[in-house]
Image (cartoon, rainbow, N blue to C red; front, side, top):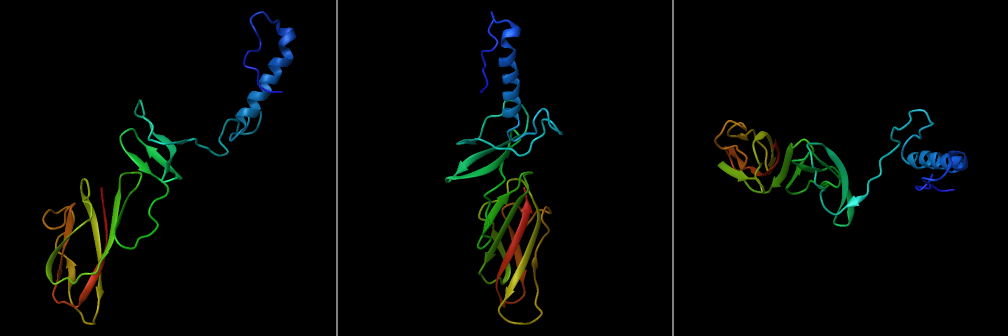
Length: 189
């Protein structure tokens, strides 16, 4: 039997509707048991797993509450979290770290990476493809050498100290032209 939403009717006697009522309670327990532990099981009501319907756009949150949902991105279902202000994509993030890229994590922390095949001679400023919104917390640069020798290669200022390393880019210094490029990772928000 299936759930009967119109049972009992106003004029029905409980004694005549008892079987219908019992069937409805059983059907509710069966329906609730999908992806949950059923009412009559251990850990009643707890999730076994969570299945989401897929939306085409970010849902609107009426009050300040967190919301986990899925939506289609280029034909693939991806998971998202919204805190009412910021939407963060949780899955389907870049897997290829060749070239330059940016990823923003759920807490708003942004990581930028890249490789530049350009010689660094003296002081050179390099800009990120897209600037950080607020601030840079750390920049790590690894030089690529095309010859040997103990030569200097370093950032000119610490992130957050103002000056050359800011949310737009960073400045490098080298004391000779033996570097053929560099890779970087920058963290900020």
